[in-house]
Image (cartoon, rainbow, N blue to C red; front, side, top):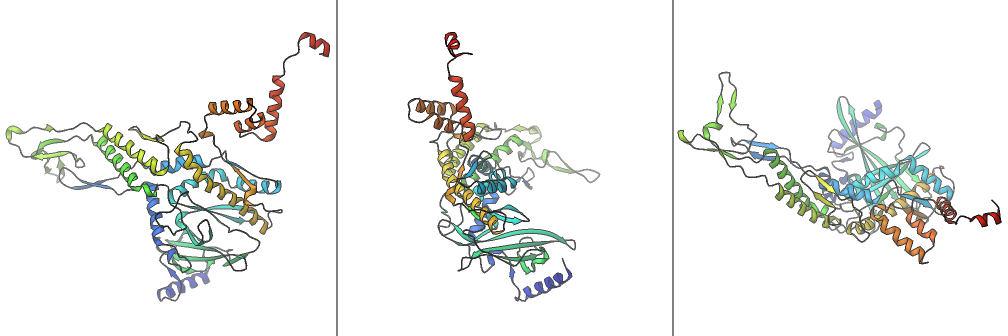
Length: 497
């Protein structure tokens, strides 16, 4: 940080204390941002479930001392979003821009350089868990990069029922200054003016506290080449793409933000995690419960001043009972571990969760060792398939918008020359193999081709989706050549060798 900037920052902090300079306790306090704080409280709770964070469990031990232990969740929320993200988008997904080879190559080069297929599948977990995700293409040198903006730091400024056209994006950075952490928040405001020009305003805030946005400081405190205001012409859409899960936000019906796929299933998640925690603790402790004379659980002090306890102080299974001299014995009150009861209960809760998040019955199961996800082929009329298709409509649209945005951005900055396609020109193909029974599919298309309902080429294209048109033509030619009957000796003599 330059000396002049340090002086400015000191004056800014002093001015903020007097109410002269802009100071924010939270990003939501900014005058340009008008989003319900309750929506971001909800997102914070969704993140807690995604992480599997629960408070420690408190209990009283034999000596009636208050003890605590870590809660052991099954964290099925993470499993559910990971499973759905993997069937929504993976490395086998492809796209093509029809009738524009130049645009197709440029878009492929950008997405390949950003390892888009792998990154997008990973961030889809965040989208499903927190209710939204934004992708922000930007220019770095002579390349276009893609930043992923997660739900807690994306703030809509203007939206309609279908789309978000203006937004603020927050980026947090921590830096050590004079031996202490300084917390910076960069706010990008993306908006349109009445002339159709696109603007990005940048504001930087600094705080000594991690949970406070802080006071506004010069951009040069952290960024040497970032401009306060950027104006772009020639754009038809914003420089971000907002994607949210399928379904209506029933928590705030006026909010443009999406809803986590498990937001309405939190009580069920609590039931599953609580049952698993109790099961874990019962297995760990053996739920052994014995009655012992009180004298056997007393605490003695040795000559050296050390406390000597008869039983392990962390145990919660010993009961002290009064006893005479003739009754100095230990009585075993242990009951069998209720493994089957816990497994049955957890599986019943999992069935409820499957219904709430749109998974087929039997997708999730618990066998006492851990959570299992079904690997069997899923039919096209299953609940999982229908849920996937509903989400896929939003995912496909987001990929189309991302590609068009990349091309527009490249054209504005002189990185791409050529026409920018429309959204409908971008064709996205997803991997449906997980839902298809290969044997049944082969029989279906073979019968359709044999009956003259479709051409052989069309049937093969349906069966071998990964083949290009050229590879498909080569395969058909090879099949036709192999199917030609061999010439007899007489025919060979007539036509020559």
